[in-house]
Image (cartoon, rainbow, N blue to C red; front, side):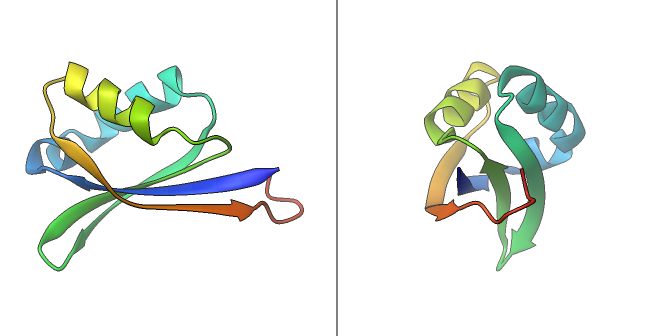
Length: 84
């Protein structure tokens, strides 16, 4: 099984509503394993780890809420034993 890491640049609005949006994403995208937020070099980021590629779906979900988001990086890697 593969693991996917998707790094997004997010606006302040997403960061301020992160708990609400985490719940929203977990409910609508069941393949998401974890979500984390960071402030890195004055850029707010959201890292989404999932068992399927979900970057386009996440972008559409945020656009439906009128929030700006863009994909910065995407990594695909074999899942480690015992992770899933």
